[in-house]
Length: 287
Ligand code: FAD
Image 1 (cartoon, rainbow, N blue to C red):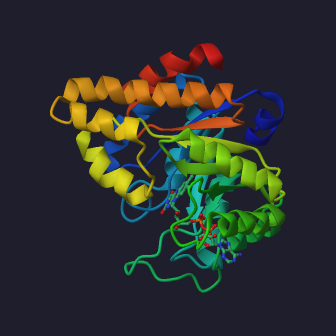
Image 2 (cartoon, rainbow, N blue to C red):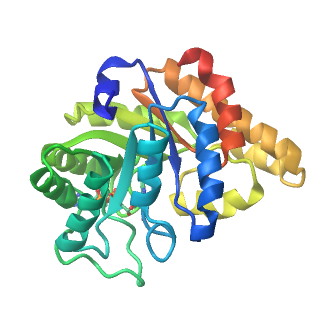
């Protein structure tokens, strides 16, 4: 079943994100991880773009090919337009089409001095329209931000911009990670009132290591609720307890989201099959 069909038929679509390895020699390790994740029967697996995904490492298309054709799991390939013009984007779309991948998460990408702005695409809605024009048989997905994109002046303004993404042809939205479900419910309420009718998958990342707090959490600009910061300060010098508490925290978040009616839940599993399996064990009865 395609990803779009799953959102029409399943109560809640469970999906997992992975990222391509920085070195080609690490591809076998990723394959092993993905095989373990296959046992969790995800509705789809998404593959990130950039940051090791394409610059010298294994490409997004290569990982997507493996998931789609060897594991037979619907695959969502991320594509950022920062640094890519129409010709580059068209080449990547051809590569994806050649391996049977038909779902693309169209993203603008983060601004960085290392990456030039795209001459052809300004916002994610631009590659969305481009993909729908170039490959009408592709399904395009988009990103959204329960706490607002860091560049947006207000959450409402950011939500209103999602209407442009929806009108450009996006079929489904995936959220940035968050640690307080209140932000997701408030965002969803605003989005529905603003006329966003697309299914929305809620993104959750289990925090099981101290290093993740400094790196990933800081990068995502997600706010940290007090029960989360209490967990971190209590277990920061006890790695085994932090691991268990981080899994519990994610499981509680996800159970609440499924029971609260989320169209989908997306696990930012950081290529860790053991973490994904533990989280899945805690929610499988609800899926
Ligand atoms: P946009 O939708 O273009 O939004 C960016 C800003 O522009 C927002 O403030 C928005 O309100 C505003 N805006 C949007 N459209 C308009 C418009 N038409 N007019 C005026 N303002 C507008 N990064 C990677 O490098 N690789 C990845 O694989 C990757 N995967 C991601 C997956 C998810 C689920 C998420 C949430 C993010 C991901 N990112 C990834 C990060 C992403 O590239 C950045 O967050 C980036 O800053 C914004 O991308 P976007 O597609 O949301 O941009």
